[in-house]
Length: 253
Image (cartoon, rainbow, N blue to C red; front, side, top):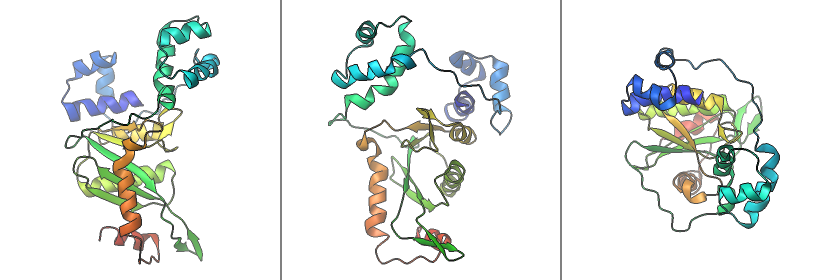
């Protein structure tokens, strides 16, 4: 699914020719053409298989807890790794950031049209939803990283169908989509350490990509966190809402 999304993104966003995409991704040109033809994602699903790293991961994590920057060859020696280093290095790329910590002098520079930061904000007021019921509903918040342009919408739930539908509506309101949508590790967007299949399928349609924010790195998400704080202090106080539609009608104001 990620390959399908990437194939659709490369020619539309970066202008990469079909033969270059085929060579870069290691697929046939006809495979690239087939991915570009339909607007819907492929339905084929490959059965998940375990990795040779899985039995060794507890030992790896125990080492990283004491020595977060221990090189992969040293880790392989300590745990008696019997295979090629490649799968071990891939797993270390995923789990090492959990132990290395945050760089206090890290700086991120954004270019126009490059990133949109996305998040779910849960405002405190309960909202009437009909039939005498009230709910605390999530608000999808999207902030363009370069311009800090802010857009948001209350959605029915944090399920993938509602998050992605809301994302589509907000993108449509802006009239353009950035090259990358940055998400925190929301369960509907992340699936077992990578972008979930519904999210990847969504990304391929407008030819963008979804990037998961690094774990335990609040500075990376500072842009959208500040947006959430703005809503808390400058939008909610003194407001009254009679329905989700009423909430969404007051947001643009």
